[in-house]
Image (cartoon, rainbow, N blue to C red; front, side, top):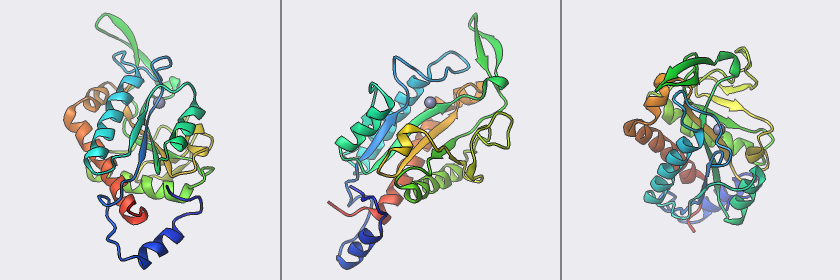
Length: 245
Ligand SMILES: [Zn+2]
């Protein structure tokens, strides 16, 4: 497990020990937190699908890919009773990294009605793209930012663009952007991030109230690219910070 005080001593130890550090050598445990729950499903897509279903599908794929890449102690958190239980489960299972999986909506100001399959749904085509959020109040802010940067760079390299509707520069936006190019935002008081003692990020993979993006986000090739970006970013982080067990 990663310590509270950064990785300085780990880096020194790694330097002293004749060990080849690589993602494969380190059986890092990643808590893949599936956002929301069956009893409280989060946002609703432009065609009426609950966010929780998107999160469960993506979280499952990320978990499978982590296992394939040698991070065999990784696990998913699905349907815990409350937000703090997500932090508690993560600690009890001894995770090294926390990644919360979400899909985004926009501020209600931008939502409009449309009819799909004879039902009226809310949609907005005003914003699309991914966002990565982290809390400066978290115990491991600098490491969380490093992990977010590694994943954000891979999202951009794979052709994905950040969403800007969370930015304070946009009407209704509430968050400061930490990195505009990579779509990294500051979210001070998000429970799952600020109480985490390990590096913790929350990823909004895309905007599901956007009618085109909703379809794109469910295509297997899109999901494959997103999952690969996340797992490779985690792999790079581990290669730098994680000692073989
Ligand atoms: Zn969500």
